[in-house]
Image (cartoon, rainbow, N blue to C red; front, side):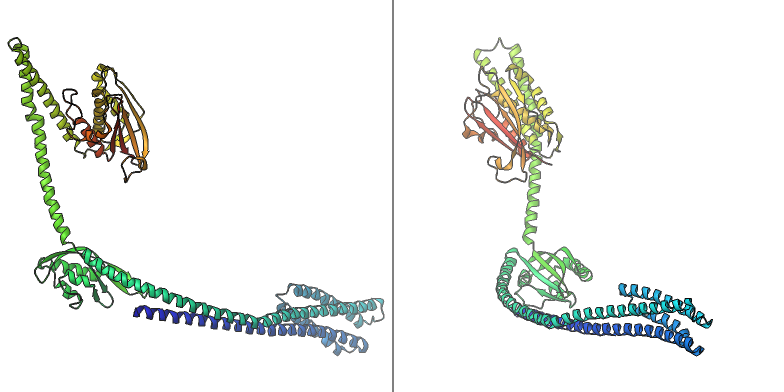
Length: 596
């Protein structure tokens, strides 16, 4: 909690400092803007003043030239022509400086262009009148006309200069007005900024108070979580540790000490003290893995053994991952788990697997005996019974004939039982490869195998078109064979069997007695007949091995056929159900998962 409090205080100081710095920056920025505006106003006034000066210089040069020309005409003294000779260069210089000063003012640039045309024209008239004066043609009409034209041109130049001066004054006035408005609004803006800053500080204070309250609550939750984590470590038999990479120091959780058989924090959490518990046979391996961890700053899953002080050997599994905090410090967060029970359970499973493998081998031997050794004497019994019937029938008494009949019936049932057991054993193996199969072809093959009995009973079988599925072909054929054979066997006397095979799809939510499945939809194949049926209470019992609902003298069979169906459906991760009523037929429904 102390660390939390310090962190909150530091964060609070950072926020206050940041807000204060922000306010200072805002005020400084505003002051800078005001100074810039004042400086700009001064520059605007100076600019206008310079434009006025240049315009005055330009007008003065023209006046000097005009005065010199008139003095020369009156006195015929050539010294009065010096201002006229110097005025051209002065006029050119003034015009260039005016262009530079008004380069950002398109209207003034236009005025300067017009002014230059007027000045050029004026200078041209100067030259003309001067030539006439030097030729003593002062009284000529041409001189008088040019002299008047020169005066008019001079007046137009003066008016243009006055227009430019007036325009410059107007620009200066607009700039002053804008600057004055901005400068007058600045104090109010600064006041608003100050008020907003104070509101931000107030809101920050309120938020900090709220955060402190939340932080206190979360701190309490963290304390609860810490205690819960400690209990979780004890229950799950694991401990946590931290390696501070830069400082090369370690932290061990209390339960890591307990896993070593020691009291919490009973020794200094160093690498050397921990490795001291390593099993001698695993010491080199553990040391090598720790060195790799120090070098790569990473620890993948490692397994090793430790020896507690009381001599108990424990199996450990450890894992670590680097974490870089907000200050850039690297830590390796590690977890060490006691997997001794897992190792023991794994060994127990291995022993049971070996036992199961032995049982499977014994079952395979039984299958071999059932398919060869048992059937061979049974075939001989049936052969000798057949010979007795053929050759000794006349010599047998009535009781002997009855006994022979019973022996023949029993041997036939025994052969059927052995065949069904072999079939069930074969179906019990689900490792056959699944493959995309045409279910309609498998159904037709099963019907073909039963063609003789179907014909004898004059049965009618109809079926929907069934889409291809990923199945074990042999087993699905056997499924159809057993279901159709069951319907034929338990048909009503003197009633031709009618068997209907239909197809649909069913959602998992609509499957009976199924609450969870990794598949959402199922192929649904129903086999419905009009046979003798049975009571619904036996709907699950009939799928049990050797289960029979009728006397063996009434109906033949071993009670294995529907068990084979159940096993085939289980091998395909599906379900099979039965619905029936006495003398109203039965419906067997097979649900096979739809896989992508």
